[in-house]
Length: 224
Image (cartoon, helix red, strand yellow):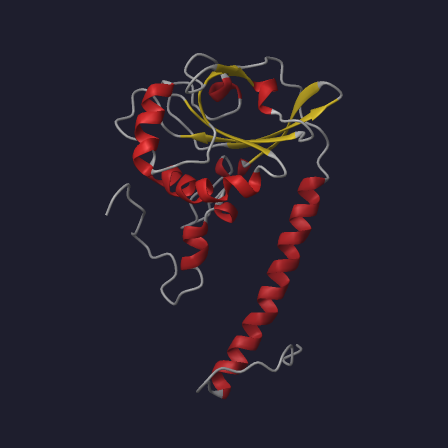
């Protein structure tokens, strides 16, 4: 194993620390390679099924069809399904934490791809809650009057909401499904939960850089 990747050293570090850190560096390099390899494999997926229905969503000021979510020159659409159904007293805390961060990134994201956040509650209810969070950039829509959530596995047969992330692409005048974060549906390993959107959730990635990690019982809240 190559232990001379760089010559940077930090004040007061011991040989024991440097040896362990260099070993960790090798693992981090391999992890980066694996992440890039998986991303390449994901990009190489063939087209999924054609979207059979041009879903109509309720926006704050008007209704919008799924086909209208594709802007000029941008043929990729990311949809995050926000767990906030009409029977839920409050939105999913974890989804809210993810979207707190994504709201800030949204202007950057939408330079290259289209983005929407869709929840099953009526649009008035969605907007009432999200205004209180200070979200300014996320395109928010309601699927209260269509079957999008059920069709793309963001809702169970009994109406429970699921935090799915789907990617769609526009090709030759049609819209196709491309990707879903299916780790959520796969059997979980001990202590792992679904972790299907960890790569876009900065909270846990920051904690992973600390000595105590994610902790065993801590979860985000809507307020502190």
